[in-house]
Image (tube, rainbow, N blue to C red; front, side, top):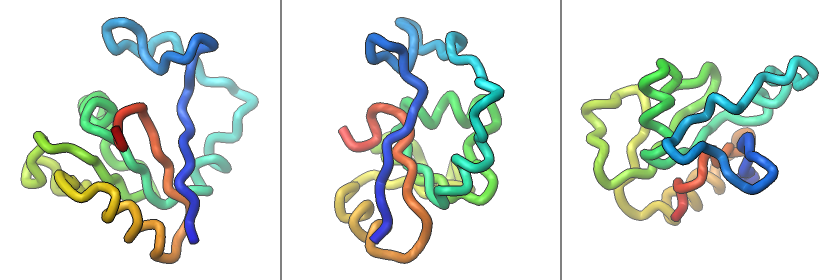
Length: 113
């Protein structure tokens, strides 16, 4: 069974974004082997609030990973390279978890809320 792992950059007081959604406080640590980290996953799971800035930055799809977005407002035809799940999130997650593969990266704060 695959693991669903939550991994984000977070401030010591528990925030993953500033008051206006900014993430400019996050710096890349040269000691972190991001390639090794990313190779542990084949699926990234995000909510709309995390996905929209990713898409705006040209990072809607990460190499080697399938992007799954839980959203009731995004339209699948507007984002053909990702899977938009509007309903039945828990059953969708259970099905993904039951299939063989690498771990699933739960990225962002609101995907499963």
